[in-house]
View 1 (tube, rainbow, N blue to C red):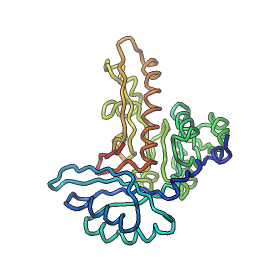
View 2: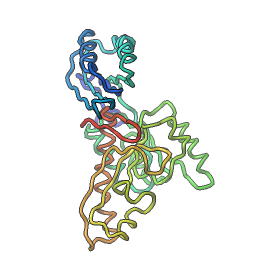
View 3: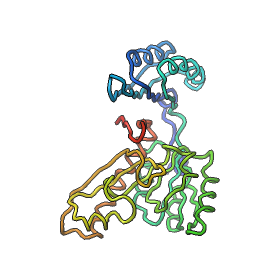
View 4: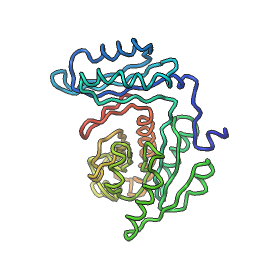
Length: 299
């Protein structure tokens, strides 16, 4: 295995040295696309991909994702950001630019079930998750050897009702300034506002049901009792409302009366791992814009 990959890093590809992504959300009005395109052209950039969506041309919100190439990106990026502010102010934009040579840093939180963690590590190892996995944090020690075999730091922080506050403070100390995204890969703990606030729209959870159905604990048992014919999984950003944050991705599979709770869980594990990996991939590729409690996903 490549030593850079083993250390939790994906190598920077040649084209990423001069490519960046711009994300924009603002009230819709005429001239936004033209203004952005003209600005990038004036600064010597070449647009390689552009997506946009408007909720309602009459007073709705407008969303845009642009990828562009620019020679000497690192040297010119600060100036571009400064110059673009005049356009951003004119159209009341919420915007950001993400250079591709700066890998997003991930922390994965997990409990005992390993299927979602394993999927993320597999996809990262294959180069499908173009990010740095900075650490794995768990309230159990079960997966330490497996995670460390990838060269990724593993932190075991036990959590009990009496130590939950102290445990979360220790997590924050580990995370502070070191990660861009937190992934709850079947981390079976409710996170507090103290962790949510500094990572607003940067904590992704996988919930093992097709939300908004079967919120909370034991959703497969709830689904079995209800006699559902479809089960699913939902990846969403974490908010203070339990399982109520903006939904990023969902998927389902048909089941029947012959499937007991154990069988529903077995089927559900496959859905969970795929749905979570998609959501994480889209986030690190800057494909998601959040508006109120919804997402716009350019995929």
